[in-house]
Every structure is written in structure tokens, then in C-alpha cells.
Image 1 (tube, helix red, strand yellow):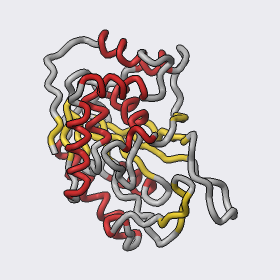
Image 2: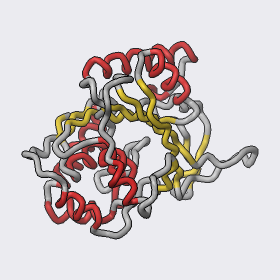
Image 3: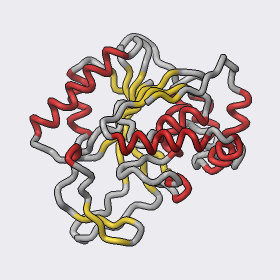
Image 4: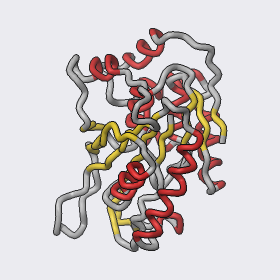
Amino acid sequence: MIFADPPYFLSNNGLSIQSGKIVSVNKGKWDKSQGTKFVNDFNRKWLSMAREKMKDDATIWISGTMHNIFSVGQILTELDFKILNIVTWQKTNPPPNLSCRYFTHSTEQIIWARKKAKVPHYFNYELMKKLNGDKQMKDVWKLPAIAPWEKSCTKHPTQKPLSVLTRLILASTKPNAWILDPFTGSSTTGIAANLVNRRFLGIDQENEYLEISKNRKLEIEHPKIAATYRQKIQGFNYQKELDLFLAEEPQAEYTPDLIL
């Protein structure tokens, strides 16, 4: 499986609110748009490279907002991926908008697609149904943004919450599966993967973020910390449900790899 959180290209010198303070939305040069053609060419290039590395039954998740998600969807179709869902992640604690001229932005979209139209993909339907009160889980997920305990090794500017990554990993992979994140940042994908007995490969061009990733990996090598984090992950019916599910999963030979 691949999870990708590519640049949203929203660094436009605007302002936002973070922890009650007004801050710039600028994340870095890597997040600045150079026009529609640039964005489409960028997405076409990395998605083509990702497709080459995927097994025929693999799936890919890509997160975004209005700034990049339409381009991603267009290129996925162009490259013959089969789009399975567009999940809307509804944040329970979004920042307010400063202009008061439009609705508060409180969602992100996560496209789920498979490589081959006619090759079946893995989906843990029963678990997702169980987590949703024994009803089919819908494509709108109400989950919180990152919590303070997820910033223990400092924070990446576009860090995703473990709650979101844990759900999509459990939904679409089996134990010991390999998961790739080509824009790994501080490797939330990898931490979630290792916490639920999956293996991980992450790529990033910023050494600063890779150092955060390494520190987070070292942190969860302490069994008590790993257990505490699993119990803090949201989206389950009760605190130890994740641990019980993992204990009941078919046991494969597991190596908690996190390669950066």
C-alpha cells in the first residue's frame, strides 16, 4: 500500500490560526505553486513512479484539499488507476477562518485507488463495520487533527494524525504488509504502520524531517510508550479495542521495519 501526502501548493503568503496564534500558511519552497501546468506535471511524474513500484493488487491513498486534489484525481484517471473512494476527513478541531467571508475549512479529502481496474484489492470490511457500530462505514470520517502527545519529537508543518493513518492502514492492508510513503515528512505513516505490525519505507528530501522520523521511531521502540500511543488513537469504540484486534489478527512473521 502507498499513502502519499504530497504538497498541497497552498503557500500563498496567507494567514491562519494555530494554537490560538495567527501564523503564516507558508510551509516552504516545496509547497509553493508555479501554476496549473506545474502542479499537473508534478503529480503525473510522482504518480507514474509510484505506479511502477506497486504490485498489481496494491492500493494507494492520496490526501489533499481543493488546492491539489482535483489535479490528483485527474492524473489518477489518466494513468488508468481505478478510484475506489474519496474519503472526506472532517476535523473535529479545525482552525477558524480569519476573513469571515466564507465557510470555515474543516475537511480534507483522501482519494483511495487501486492499480488495476480488474485486479481485486484488499479491504477489511468487517473491521470497518465493527468500528462504525456494526453499520457500513461511510466515506466521511470525523476524526481529530493531531494532539499534543503526537508532537513529542517536535511537529512537522503538515503532520497528519495517527488516528487517520491507523484507520486507512487497517482498512487496506494485512499484517506485515509493506507500506510506502513518498512524502514521508515526520513519518506518521511509518509510526502508525509499526504500531499495527506493518513494515514501512519512507522517502523525503528534507533531512530535518527525517531526523524527526528517526526520533519518533526510537520513541515507540519502548513497549510502554507504544502501548500508550495505541490506546490514545481515536476512532475505536473503547480504549483497548485496537490492541485486542491486533492480538486476533492472523499472525505473520513480523519485522517492525521503518526505513528512511
